[in-house]
Length: 69
Image (tube, rainbow, N blue to C red; front, side):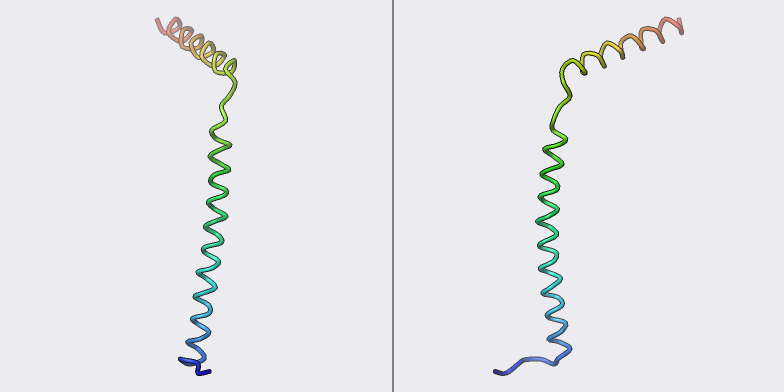
């Protein structure tokens, strides 16, 4: 079997191939993590928390308006 190129070229070609494979693996892992984060972020707070935030915010704004005027 005849090998093409010098030894340095073969080593360099192998390094490039290894880097490409590691990038592919890292990209797949990053994609999995991204899907996990999107699923985690899409979970909502309970309705009662939303209602309490709304009431609390309205109360604070009402008190501030009353203090200013």
